[in-house]
Length: 72
Length: 355
Image (cartoon, rainbow over all chains, first blue to last red; front, side, top):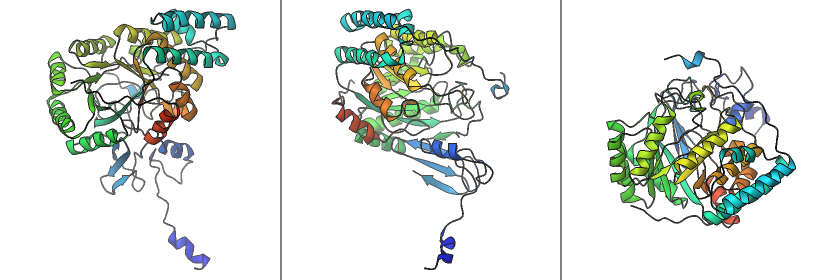
């Protein structure tokens, strides 16, 4: 595979932060990333809608009305 | 009702307190050994304040004493519990530490769990070896819809899962207390949350006395009472000691000890995390106030204490843990806690259904 093909295989970064809902390109989100190790995302990273989040004893799911379910 | 979002931070952060000197610490530890370890009586408020002022270099000795008290009066077993949020968010109350209040601009949205998911959560919890499963709802008190959901859920869990069921549904009427006891709910959680003298800085939509009343009704109905609180909410050391003494006076079966995890959008969202040495002194103080209670690590330990502190607390008076995730945040992997208990040679309490 030639090196110039690699960028096409990398998906575009999501535009919004799952923790604070802010624009990923607008500010630094290191603190948010540390939070996301200890709690589920609250905002859809595609459209920044607040998601419905259910925490279970060994996992979680977060539902965006437009973009569906993410889980961990 | 005022708009809390527009108010300045409601707490005054207490001034730092000087640690005890070496002689006073030695005298305190000797007195605590005689009073609590030998005689089985909890310390009073002045001595609990002193415990909270033990200097950092004497904290290991303090934890050793608290651990000896726990081993002498409770034994080596550790009670393991899992919790689940049946109804998340949208709570009308204004507990300033809580991301589930509908009064703040917290990102937590209202969600209900169905009975199938509730049973699945109970099975996940039982698979860790836990003997307790607590169903929690973010409400002032249960309405008919919630009571119906709990009734159905408790019956389904008791039919399918070998685990004790506890509930935490806010303030109760006597009829609701009786109904929960009749369903086979063996333990009910309702925290004092804060010392009586600090409560109005933490909650304005109900009173400390209303909480106390629900707790006494639960106990009088024959259910086990689980009642604790949070520390690190801006309270003074005197108020932290007062909470421990008030809990001791209530004499609950279990005391869950939470360390504030400041949640975005809540009035306490900008408070600093409690330091690990203060957290360990608090654990020891609670054990020395209540030599026989089940003292449970609840929320916030991952942030406040980390892995090392979790171990120190288990060797400093704690004899129960919540495993897995919390209501809106995530906990450690259950296996990490269970491996630690095995390493410390602390057996997990086995299931003994009381009802």
